Length: 324
Image 1: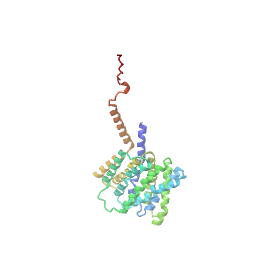
Image 2: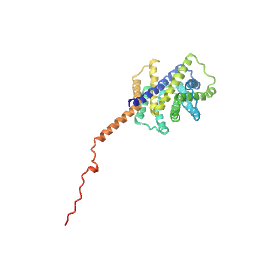
Image 3: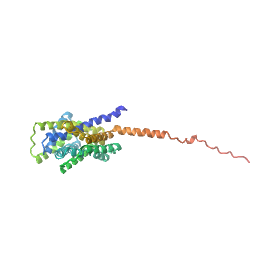
Image 4: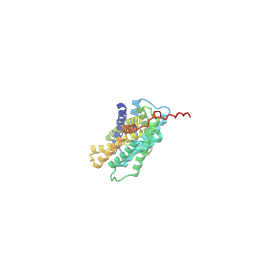
């Protein structure tokens, strides 16, 4: 019983590696990577990570997995990376992270018709609390909000949510390491001709940019997406989406620890709300609530006085006819 209950918690911890790593990408992108090259930025992020994972897995797609990998790679990697890179350059981190924080709700709604995963009450409440926490934590009097950046964030969030649900639906038994590598290579390969046509020659990279791309490609992509798709394999889409709220939390804490930002009382309250929302969406909490309701129902039904069975009732004997 304890082993069964601990399994979802273990997969939740594995999944949490992804949003924590992704939470560092905004800081690294704005601090170290070249601006105005979102397409090449996506290529440099996806292709090296995909090649390394392919070498580790040693498996190639077959049959319908070829076109599925192409579609998923475009949604989850290629187009998503380019849009996130563009949003990071055009928007304050707070705005971009808040838009991406709505992903759990979108994933829950998509998982209903596509995966037959009905939204549960506690995860839905947790998503609402988590989004409120992100808004309290990040939304201030931000100025200079670029509509194109907002559009890029919304598009990235929507496309990736669709891609994650389709990954869970189409590839439930494919090796996670191989599946991640195929998507990364497909997404990067799709972007190469587009990058050449739109942005021309690749940007010149200094030492900081090389190290930045090495970190983003290795840790925030190869390791992070492997953990993310592992979580999707073992947890519901809504639960995985809620764990993704650790992304903006990481961004705030990173700014406090590295950039010297001050953690305000408002941000602290937002962090608490986000953590509360994530906890409410975990399978163990839902199971505990259901078990408590079942026990209460059993107690209430057991305390009622049941009517005696029909066979136990006294029946009146028929009167014998009297002789006249």
